[in-house]
Image (cartoon, rainbow, N blue to C red; front, side, top):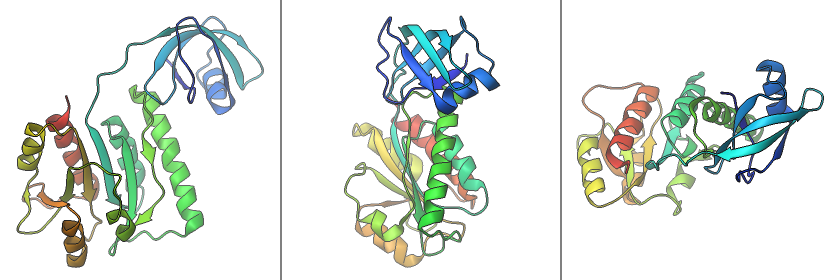
Length: 247
C-alpha cells in the first residue's frame, strides 16, 4: 500500500486531511491512485493511519477521509549515529540503510582526515538531499517517526555537545578498545536504551581526536580484528546496538 507523508497531521479516527504538493503528485501521477483507493498516511511523529481518497484536484492535491489509525510500532533503541562524511555516494547509502535499521538521529561530521570538505552552500544542499533520502526510506520501510539529519559540523563542536545519550561509543582501532558486545551488554544490564555511535573516516580518527573523545566520555569500542569500510562499520555497529538495547 502506498504511503504518504503528512507532517504533523493529527491522524484521529474518522478524520480527514488534505495532501498537497510532491506527496500528492507522486501518489496520483506515479502510483496512479484514484478516488476510492486507500493509502497509508504517516505524520513523522509516530502516528500512521489508513484512509480513502475521496477527491483530487489536478495532479498535486487530494483529499483523504475516513482515517483508521494504525497501532504504534514497538519502541526501538534510541540510536544516534555520528560519522565522518565518507567520500562518494556512500553517505547516501548509509543514510538510507540507517533509517531502515531504526537510527533516530544522524550527525555528519568533518574530522581531521575527512576527505569531503563542504562550504556552507554545499552543506545545505547535502543536508537537504539526505533529508529527502530519510523521507523516502521512511515511506518504503514503514518507519513512522522521521529521523533527524543534522547539518554537517566539525568534530570539535560535536564533542562539546551535552544533548546526546549517556552511552557514548567510539568505534576505534586502538589497542585498548573494548569489544562492542561487552560494552552493550553492560549498558543493557544497567537499563540503558539509548546510545551514540561515533564512526570515523576512511583514514580513521587521529590520535588527538581519540584523546579528545575519551576526555568527554566516549568509550573506545572494537568491532573486531578485521578492518572495515565505513559503511560496513556503520551497519555492524547499528545492528549490534539494536540487538542489545531494544526493549
